Amino acid sequence: MKIEFFKHNVGEDELREVKKVFNSPFLTTGEATHRLERNLAKYLGIKEAVGLTSCTGALHLALLAAGIKPGDEVITTPMSFVATAHAILMAGAKPVFVDVEPETGNINANLIEAAITKKTKAILPVHLYGQMADMEKILAIAQKRRLKVIEDAAHALEARRDGVRPGQKSFGACLSFYATKAITSGEGGSFATNDKKMAEYVRRLRSHGVTRELSQRQRLGSMAYDVDVLGWKYNMDNIQAALLLPQLGRVEKTWQRRAKIAEYYRQSLAKIGVTMPVIVSKSKHAHHLFTIWVSPRKRKNILNYLKTKDVSAAINYVPIHLFSFYRRQLGFKKGMFPVAEKISRQTISLPLYAKLTDVEVDYVIKQVQNAVRKA
Ligand SMILES: *Cc1c(COP(=O)(O)O)cnc(C)c1O
Image (cartoon, rainbow, N blue to C red):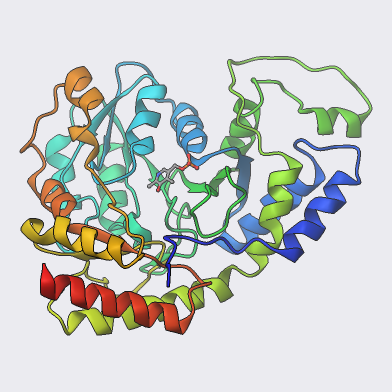
C-alpha cells in the first residue's frame, strides 16, 4: 500500500464548470470569479471575498491596503510557511517574530505586547494546522495599541473560535487555494473582509491599480480606465474560479470526513504515548494538517520507517527565522524562539484528506505505531 501525503478532490463537477468557461469567450477575471467571490463570502459569513492568485499575494495586498509602509514592523509567528513573513518583506516592512504556545503552536498572544514598538503597525497571526489563534486576545491588544490585524487563514477556511470566523473581526483574512489546501485551483487565494472599501481597493491592487478591470469595462461598454496607484498582478481568473466553485459547495462534507479521520488518528495515537497539539475549547478545527509530536531523538528514525512503508509524511514547519536568508538578512539566530524551535524538531504531519479510505487510515496508524515502537 502506498499512502500519498495529499490527494485533491477535483473531479467531474469541476471539469463541467471549467468546460463552461472554455466555451465562453472570456478566460480571465469575470463572471465565474465574481460568482466564486460571492459564494466564498457567503460561506465565510463575511461581506466580501476578493479572488486572487495566491495567499501570498493576498497577504501582500492586505498589508498594503492596511497602510503598511517601508520601515514599519509587523508582528507574526515563526511557526508558519515562509510565505507569511515573505509577504511582510514584500510590503517593505520588517517581520517581528513572537514565540508560540507550547500547547497549540499558535502565536502566543501573551508575548505580543512585549514585542510592540513605535514602529509596529500590524499583527499577522497564522491559524496553524487549521486551529485559530486566540483572536479575542489578539484583537483586544490590537484595539488598545491601535494596530491592524491581518489573519493568515491559509489553513483555516472552515475554522471558527469563540463564535468568530476568519476575517470577521479583523482587517481581513487571507486564504489559500494552493495544491494541498482544503479546496484548490492549483494556485489561488482570496482576501476576505467585512470592509467593502478595502475589498474594492484590493480589487484595484490585484490588477495593476486599474480603476476598472476588463470585465467591468466590457459590461459598461467603455474602454476608459485610469491607473491611480501602483498595483500588482494577482487577479484570479475564471478557470481557477470554475475549479473552486464545486469544491466550495462540498466544503463542509469534505471537512466532516477529515474531522472524522483526525479524531480517529487522535484516539488511536494517544494510546501509544504520542503527543499532539491541544484542541482548544469553543472552537471548530479546520483539520488542514494532522501533526504529531515525537521525541526529537527519534524523529529521523520514525520518518525513515514511514518512508520504507510508503507512508508519506511532512514537516510543518522549519521555523522561518532559521532559514539562511532570514538569519543573514535580519540577524535571527537559533535559540531566539525556543518553543517554535522545539516544535519544529518534534513535528510530523500525517496524511489527512477526504479521499483516504478507512483501510488506508488503519494502515497509517499501524505504521506510526510500529515506527514509534521501533525508533
Ligand atoms: C500555503 C500557505 C501560504 C501560502 O499560500 P499560497 O496560496 O501558496 O501563496 C501562506 N501561509 C500558510 C500558513 C500556508 O500554509
